[in-house]
Length: 269
Image (cartoon, rainbow, N blue to C red):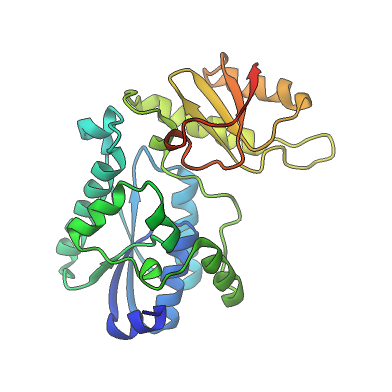
């Protein structure tokens, strides 16, 4: 099935809209196909504020109808205690909330979709089980579109791409079985944002992407770390309560706790 085939069959859609590349592309493609699209964005302590701001800006630019719903995943014990199936329980909660929004609006007949792509099907994604249980469709995956395919098509379409690297759910910063602290989530977000703003002596951005992981001790995961950045990094980490940290360099940023924490340890700082 092609994406065009899907949109020809399903004209009234409700799309789980994170504001990342995949959900942006799905919404933009559906609008281009003249579908009636309702985008629903989840807000909560686990969602970086920049993601919500970006989602609103994109919706405004595209003339996309957007609804927002506040959800607190820490109310679910399996999520708050970082169960290995945390993403399943979290996705299930999110989907229940989306269903509540549709019911409140009297629009339950809309086909609920998400932006999962073909790459996601071959990775450790516990949340996919929740999608299947709730009958949520993933048009990008059904069309066999990979992340690379989506990026190319999005550029060809010329619609606004995210200017920054995606900042996924903050719960992914915690190792499994490590209790999540609400105030800690906020500090993790503030620390990552400050580090991503760092510039070197030539005015270039130091970190292309990074994650502050808790193992439970703080671990700064980056793709590259240079010694001259140590002082600036130390200051930011200490200011947010993460003074005693280590740095690990990895080729890929995502899926850290599902890959055996593999990487090159750059030592304590």
